[in-house]
Image (cartoon, rainbow, N blue to C red):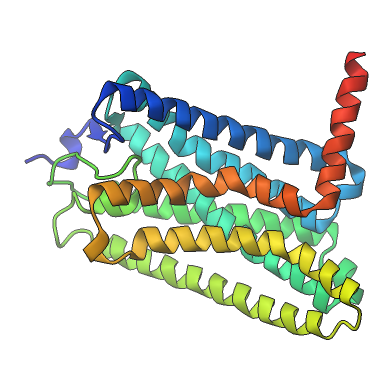
Length: 311
């Protein structure tokens, strides 16, 4: 038995026991991480360099790519290190930092996705008021609110979680540090306060989810009233990437935290948590670049400019 003051490190759940599979996982993680860095980096560069993309929608997309880079960089490098060097440990401060930053990026991303649904709602349902409701100052304030609320939420949960006494050892059934796994190490009566905070956060997240759903119901009604088929297609095409990203983000997160106990096992939990924490940041750039001609054009111009610079 140990308490939190005597714990200097936690043991994470390994992806494999054999050395060959560990190395295979390392190269797989490295490929996914490099793809996420490249995809999100290209979107950030294209939006920053192309003045045609200096609009509210792409400003929020740039912020989304920054948050995706942050969230995947919080979890995957440590998993790569452990697979490469056959380790399971993470320091106490490293675990606290992982909880703080991962929850920060995930909370801010969900807030930003909610703001992006409002952007699409105003663009399609109130196009004449778009410039007024989503001016540059308003966009900066909304993005800052998403980042700020994400940080305050993560700071509150991290401080509260790591102030709890931990008497159930230091082994986490997860490949990275997450609050529900740490709460399992606490005694039964001391984690009720943090469970209450988690419930409040879940209610706020559900409120954001309802806002997104209501926004898209209004968008769908507005699009169906557009007389021309070309106009309907154009309106849908601006919403589909955001809707796909929201669906991927919410579905993987819900399945990870609310999956039935009957199918729960360390292996299943490991795979689902990987899908929830790693796949969305790596796939989001692909979703936006495939469905968005303006992003494709900006990337093509960036490529042509790079070639000219090297000639």
